[in-house]
Image 1 (tube, rainbow, N blue to C red):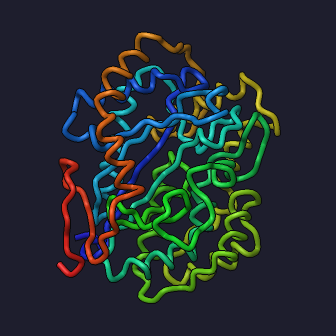
Image 2 (image 1 turned 60 degrees about the vertical axis):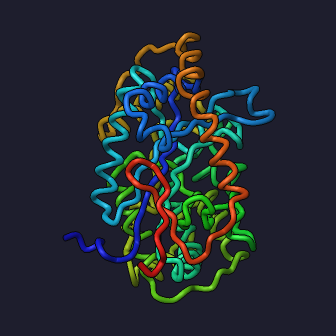
Image 3 (image 1 turned 120 degrees about the vertical axis):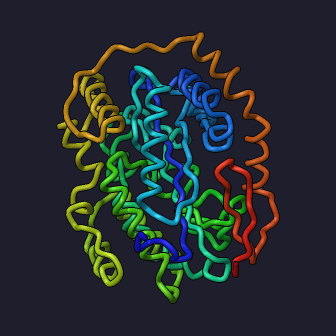
Length: 365
């Protein structure tokens, strides 16, 4: 039996990526989700989602990222195995389109058009606030470990434009149930949800991220929640990199889990900037980089590849609206209500079954 089993912790993932044709997402992405839905409606009706830009950002690009979610797992190997299965299914459904696993597309400057990696941590109800506090304490390191959005508006920004600018996350508030912040207590699932991480195509790096989360979740006593300190370290992780303050935080974390420092000194964002070879984005360089990211997401290999031709299709977009977006509207509305308005049920832990149906488990069960 894995060492992670029977620790009273479960992990689940919601992975968001962009499907582009070739460098911008279009309604074609909905067609890929429609294919998934009709191939396996029992699972993908509740475990996928589509996102759209808002307000002024729609003038740059209406379509945003798509999401695939896993079941909760008490074993990291099983969680990653399921994620691989869903990635393969999405890659097949997307066809020749590019799958781009970054937090923000490089040539946009659109805070409402982003992609994230949400990690759901399930723990007994009596442990929830302790685990929340400890994750908040070490979260700046996890932000840096996953940072993958170094450009905005065609210019180099830093480690993560998404973390610094996205409307859907932000510094910690007094109310842990408020949805648009980096770390929340989820009303819908009863989990602790880490919302601040960028997408991570590299499964080896993702494993380190998940193992760090697991180790933090097992800490017996709570660190103090200092929101001012968190805001400072968050800014350093998103805009600067592996600062002396974050190095000191890493030394603290090493008492329970040692993230290899090479992953913090050279982030995914650093690697992506090195591939661009410049502070400014050119269309041709961007296409080559997205082709490389698409190849890495589909195969797990980070290596140069030649771009291929792909064009958006009005009929695929229309089929996506009819075959995916419209059938899921009732569930989308239900999710929005539960995430913002559902009553808080302290003492219970909400999980989901393989079919996606909510199951309530008493915290002491």
